[in-house]
Image (cartoon, one colour):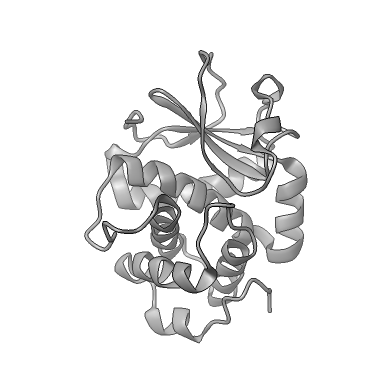
Length: 206
């Protein structure tokens, strides 16, 4: 289990021992990731992660998992890497630039929310999470919950779901299977189900 602290996305590097495990990678090439090339995230990335922080604190209060955020050109788009009681979210700056070009700030928030959703799922339970869902659907549902708490406009929310649709991990099931899981988390955490259902969540920004 990962540590449970109130601060969840930080940029303070720590010393890692051997044996990290990639929990989720939103792109191919995870085997090429070089931890030695981790760097502090940019100020823009941390600002957007702060929106996820604020939303997550509304969900888990003082029971939030702690996840470092780092950038690395060798990362497989965006990755959550666990090593014992520690976890880090590592992103490729090129990938974040592409997501931002297509979906704006909300796209980055959605990607971070999904990766952090894996950490939330490891440390918390939720009545709406179905026991038969695989890890990626569970993380999707937590991402929906985080997005509902993020204060996004209707247009930003549509962009956020578009980013989730466009950038799945290799382990993700089809988008049609993902939608109910995301919707469950989104509506159970205060999101408007009618707004969700009216959107075209096909991976293209309107």
